[in-house]
Image 1 (spheres, rainbow, N blue to C red):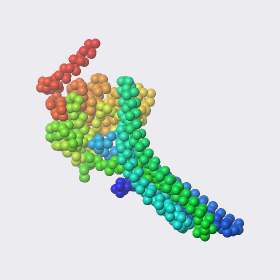
Image 2: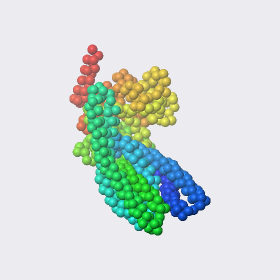
Image 3: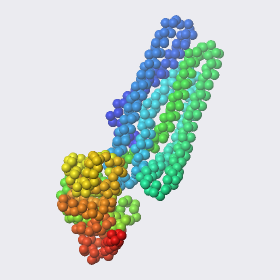
Image 4: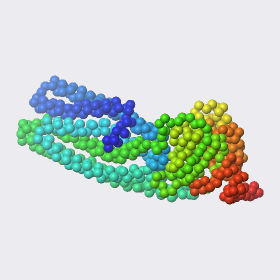
Length: 585
């Protein structure tokens, strides 16, 4: 718990002043509120003794000043509390987002996307509410209780002893409630993750859902997930709801005792043991104690619920990236040569089998390498080791003759550009998206890269040309256009190694050939690795690698593989026969 609090407190930073000022303002507010009944009790006693109007006016002025000051300090505490809690949540959200940006793929695999979204939204909101209550309500309520109890004993003597009996009852009750509710909140947040996962999956695959007319199935699946969350929350809230009636019963029972026994004492002692002013003050303090205890109940409920949220946030903040730049990291890459020396790799230490096994591969700088293989042959896994998106399990991967683990990560990844099949464009203009590759690229450089990627032709057909706005996810451009924009974006990095992971699958064969021709003519020194399903996409490569089951089964150029590899020959023959039949149609 202490470690968790220390981790979260680092996000307060520039809002530390507001966080400290809030409790100080609350203390003054509470003192004034607790003194007001004391002053009123003295006024009642003065009036009962037959005081003059001047005395009443003086007491009235004092009460007005105290009330106004209490209001001012309370309002100021509310303002500083809002600033501190909102600022804390902002910093916490920022710290989490920045932390996630530093994660390796291995770290991201540990948390689901939906879980990270829940932690960045719902969990932070819960912690923000708890923090707001801690620096204001959690300070105000205990102080109000202490002062009210103290003033109650000062004003009522033995009459205030009734309040001491309520404390053990309420303490035991709160302990049992929290102990029972905490596991339920822990469970419900995991189900929140599952609910968000269902929403994310459905929205992303909406076209598939509608194509297969599976709306009713998805609604039922979402309904079941929502019902699971509702059931756990309902059960937890029912347990937490016991707080309020339990406290009200104890305090109202105390007030009944104060009113009945106090009235009896006033009448029988004729004001000697306790007078009317003390009696009125005791009623006011009883009410303050009631309100304070009810607020304490709310604070405990909020803190109980947010404790699990805080733990989930700290999990994200405490997670250390499994990939880091080494000390004295190398910051210059000599060339685009790549060496796989006895490389084996698996995604998890607990995995039963290797995703890659016994990979020995040496690529010269400037070579064009094609990679072919069926689904699950680990083609993408192989290229992800080059920019060190994952670290090898055995062996080593070298770029420019140096192990990638010795490079500064940012330097390495800036020199290894990867274009994936599932390309992502961000909301903004075409220029904005292209400049992800190079923020300082000139308009001429943008056009040059787009011409090389065969994207300039369709861009210039848009009314706004390079200022055309791209919707989130690139929904207003075709798959082939999206792929070409992403290739142009990668080229703007001017990398030493360019990897195309099946990233021309959505373009026609003519455009594909033009892109490869442009690569050969304009970036001859860049090492080019092309993963493809079509033999035509890699046919003119310097070497073609065949993969199966995470192993390299054959290497050679097109002519060599046609002679030596039955698998390659079968792929080539089947694809060309299919193409010929289609042409004949």
